[in-house]
Length: 448
Image (cartoon, rainbow, N blue to C red; front, side, top):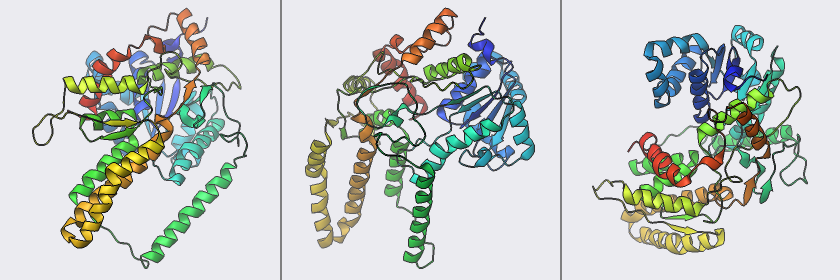
């Protein structure tokens, strides 16, 4: 008889990359809570040495609110003992050979012991430097695969990625993997090593140009307070997706937004993704040479459109408004525009033209220069964000989840679907956003 998901985890040695990331820390908590008899968890994070890796894991993973239930159930002492016994902090970097593990003894132990490799390390910044994104998200995956090939008894490599690697293609998107070198348009051949050389050459060229421009000297500047606050805001927007929109809408910062309100937003709770990861690993652990893609999403089974999300946001902040610095309640109001052409016309008339007039005034009146610089920079960065978000807010694809559906049926036969729920049909979006997602976001991210 096939083991269920909990039995599958027993006595396993598992490597998790990107262990301090949002998805991985939920996975680690789930494993320790459901199967304390897991043999060992090698948790890889970027750090200079093992002590630093251990400190980072405790600070960014085990001391978080996520572990409150487990800590309450077993007690601080027992949980700390469990972590000490089962968890091995691994300082490393997947963008490097041997996933950046420099301790030869630790590396050999890992290669001898590891059964399961879960690759979840990635940069999720929308505006990441090309060479950094290529090094982590592309060559990082190759480095993890090469490491897996060196392991003595690997049973499974589970690689986690965003489904949006499909590009901007519309329609029904099936669960299939790309062939090496296949491009999104299916017409051109991509040589990834050539791409990397080009990225390295361009990076070197830009550094040399910077040195020539600066006369070989390094100059540092300290941004003014308003610049720092603005840059911090942009930083957050570039790292989050729909959550950043919710927060900045509630704060009254978001005045207009490019989005087709009829577009489906494929959103899925993280615990369902983690449940799917464990179920997939259990199902494929003994498959030799299997290459199966699973879409874990909601767009096919239980779609929610941006118009619904906007209406739920509006109702939530009408009921629970934030308070501005002046002590007044914030009443958010945003203009949504469904095409890029119309958005450009609107923003040019509403923002760019007044800024240009302010620029002319600043020539006559120097006291207006700071104000012009602030608004001009805000506008340019806002338009860059529009460019970054455009593929997602105007996306016309629906992710097929046939493979996930087949696995779900298997889990139901083992009576495991209740514990490892993966069915998006059970989500009541109204209840989820109004009572779980937005309140949790405001409490734990915005820290209202």
